[in-house]
Length: 633
Image (tube, rainbow, N blue to C red; front, side):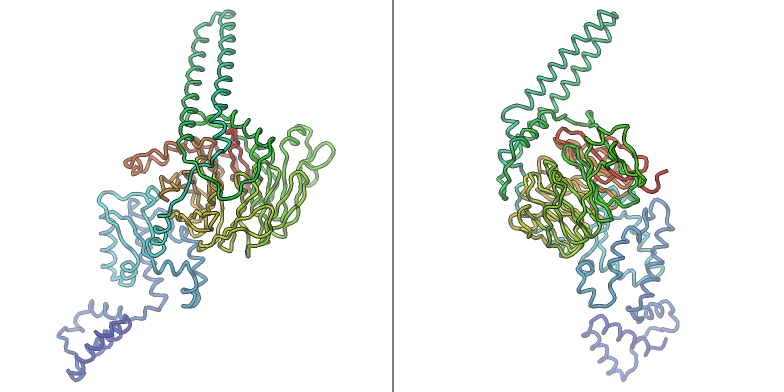
């Protein structure tokens, strides 16, 4: 390479990078030397330096250079030893992000797309062990990958630690994004929130009157007395007094365990702060109130040693048309939203009465003895139905659809009552508040909205997510709603002001499901990768990730006292998690990767049924629903 060419390349590089002052000084120096290079380096005899200068002189706008550099780095990573190689295909993990960026066809698109703009303005923190870091730097220098090295220096902060490499799935902070968005999130998360229960709630009334404890202990006493009489009779008749004594001891120990669990639950509830509602609460009818109080009195206390009973409702012959399902609070009604724009509601009491007399028609539909189908067909939407949920008493069904509308149906009249219009695109989810009357919706238009049943226009609109808002959930005190989005964040909104008061960052894929603990202090969120995260609402910190599912987590539900969390997934399993112990971990236990998997108490596999919906009844019976997949044999 001639010295003049070198000077030309250097001059072009300085101007391209914006070093105008340095370029001016170089030009003046060359002019003072009558255009001749003043360098004493022998360029023709230094091929390495020539190659390096040529690499700088090449156009950085050439996509092939980026493709070639990334392909080489990717191949090097996948060909490493198992201890250091990537666990998942990088392109598959970030497939949705790549699809979004595929829409960038001009430089102006980078400014218009919020997602692309946030990536360019942010940096990524990556935890990496010292040996892996040394191997990476050596590879980049050995292969003279100056383009990749420049990208890494500009967009990545390596946090190097000593010791062996850890799995990224065991550490939620292994890969984090920092930038202006995170600074905004930190500022938002400083706001004060009132996460306690409502004043004068039914639980409060029951606790003050002692109804739960007295009735439960009364039933236990009667049960114990009956067991003693039975055991005495058996011992007198067959002379097996030893076995009777053992049974009595076992029953006594079980009753003592249940009593301790009730006392702990009562203590926790009494220590929770109480808040006033920001919305005007609807008046509850006496019949509904008595029914709820009766359920609370008969609630079974669950724990890691007292598992719930599970009732699974399976949809058959759906032909992959089932988009969503929902179960009423008492499990008596099941609804499904279908791709043909219909909603079907099953009454479990009718199906139970049909029993063995149930028949199938020519369309494989279950019908009764009179030939009528055992479900109610609700038709009104003009697009696929993506959610169908019951009101707390079960007298209404709320549905949302791709036709951008939300519809309210009466389960008593089997008719559509109201059609709510406001969203601009597909409405992915709609959920009633814990006390009914109000409901929240979320949409492809990147907003969430709050409605009341008696108004056709939304009361509040929440905007701030950078992508689809896929799921929504109410806080138990009705003062907040949580939204999960394809932008991999969860947000908490104040229903009175419509203001975002919390931003939860940590998921690595789109958030598909949310659940609030009964005491209102914690929240669980499930994502597309199968990860569940437990969040503390007051600090916006992730308490612990719950790892175990290997596909989308579509539904989450807390038990009545909040000690267990149930999760349903596309991997055809229902898992139970001991979240009471998850919230009491020490820092040493949190750093132990294996501790996450130990909190899974039990897994209930289905034969070939992805789990669409879960719900704990007020008495702590767990209901689940799903449709048999096409792979079923």
